Length: 514
Image 1 (cartoon, one colour):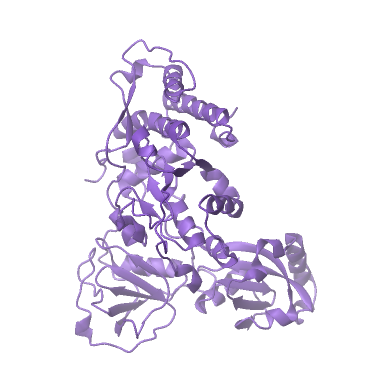
Image 2: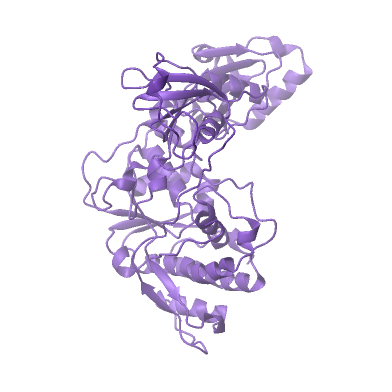
């Protein structure tokens, strides 16, 4: 039901017979004592107790409502099998709520001109149709989330040309500035696509390379080149960004804009939304591992995003202590694998009971600012993995009830893993955002995984994927009351103290003023 919260099923839950009577100091003291770091300060009422229960934090799947208005131009039914692939770009699955609009929006934001639907649930993208037409009756399946739209068939795609936007106004996801690079003229001349554009802009070069299905846009006005990821564009090859800025300024003030590049020139390089074909390859571990590694986090801390990064940078599937059909449909094939099979490079879990923790030989403990985590998990419970709660839901009685239950769990989760975890790597979500590549080096080293330069480039060029919620839509008011903040701030201090007592770095400074 819209506006309702799915019943919670958490691994460690703080039961609070009369928690209101306990001050934040009492709660923080209790959690420190539970972690073996201090003594309990008695509450004037019943003490909060930590109890272990089964299950995870899985809720409702993301909702993708059908649209009665059909977008784009329907191109027809086309073959799509092992020998004839109609579209060769990215793929998206949603076995319950797929619509033609969702598929077209996804393909458009990923830089593709065509969107194809198969089996009523699969979305394929591409910039060219590379297979013959099929009889229209072969595309007789309807989309799972939308009536009246052709949605392919078995080995058949219903293909739409997405709505065209004016040059310079196309909106892409996953476009990132890679840096300034000094390149030889002879090297640049080998790049597969070149475009001379007197009025070249960053956007126009990115659009050119996106249309050519190439992951890198390399340019110095008026020259635009498109190519694949390679060691030429590794971080240690970067030039000072001022070199590219200076060149751009010179181009605007001189007549050298139409001159050919010199032997060495500094080029600005951007990752386009096109995913390098080498980045799409994922597999289970070739040999089963006897060591189980957890990827443990409080719900809403970015576990799905980190799984996406780990799969990109290692090429191996991650597993899960639970099964989330939405994540499986979006490409996390390890969701259906038994979590103790040893075939996944690490296993997602939100569990935090001693027994569950000790089932793992080692763990990556992912910690995120509790204010952000609580809002992210509330969004997920109200509107799915990528949706947002409405202002009405933020103002409902369910929000303060959610905070009073989940804020202590944020602290107890971290404290339990610090106490019972055998071998830990602590990763802060905010540090991963700030310093992606150094943090990925630490994670892959901890996982004893080999990370190639190409894979590292894959992670950097597609770091967001389709698994991060947009930050554009936020509640129109601050949902945290002063009492909530007092409680949450006390938990932040508690976890910070516990981390430092275990010789880990403390929580990032921005969690709260100190």
